[in-house]
Image 1 (cartoon, rainbow, N blue to C red):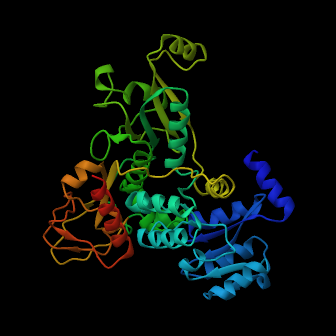
Image 2 (tube, rainbow, N blue to C red):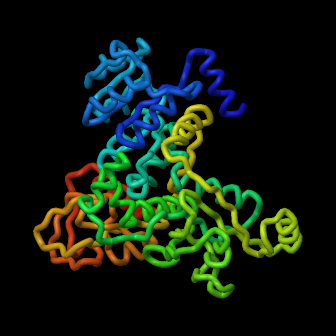
Length: 431
């Protein structure tokens, strides 16, 4: 049965998919508006450190104040949901334990919270949708395997670039095309020096957290998104940080191809990005050596070949995210998950860092982050981005240098650090 028909039946039966949301910021609050208009799926519980934010969102949707309950107690929370009312809580882990929720969408972008919520939810048999790719590229392989053993679904969100790229990858491979490059558009060149203070005015004008905007501008988000694509498909960055040239749509098949054919890639099977007018789209450069298929692709106006472009001109971020939860609940299928660590996102010094300093996290004035192949990152002893926040510099690190096990000590008390060490041990045991 089509997904829409499943959801329409749930709506008609009065049994909608009941979603919980962790993080009611720009992405999360928009998602609540989407699920309010959907058939057969609605957000009934929201966790945020500022409970006024989810309360304001629910009220803006016309939900009466008497139908909104605030509690951090599990028994009370279950009663709220049983009564068909809406739950607001400060406790993110509470949502991951509630029997009366079908799944939890994690939208904080903070690796420590994401790891805790996902682990707690999965160990309680809860479907988990990650609108938090930062966590996925750090410990996603472990979380996916745990979910499969537990019998629930762990997945990166539909609508984010990794999911849309994976959709193009599956589409291409299903028809037998070779995927030469998967990529996305980045709407500005990377500025490795950007700080939250430097972009605060722009962030506030867009309703964004300045650190979040800084993480877009310094390239971190692009590195994270394409690492997730890499870990789901096995495609690799051509060079550390990827190439990232300014290429317009009509020239993608001329540039993102091997050097031997006039392009920039040292090999086929890469992830990359363009700063041309591609965003918010994603693309796949595919190839075939079959003359009849080349002829037919030419006939349907796809170019002369042997390289062809498949392009989706948009990704809808949080607007599409609920689809991932619907598919998890109805079909028991993830949208996209990390099958192995093919790529790693490693932290780099945004300024000179002195021994003894404690650094900030993603989007801070201290670090930017760069994609490497997993093997190269391990050989260099690079610090995974997801465990860098709040760690300490143990030897001076010059601006632009990599944070490594020799010059930096992550905070080993965090949950995400411990989970990452479990994942590393799992890989060691498999060798």
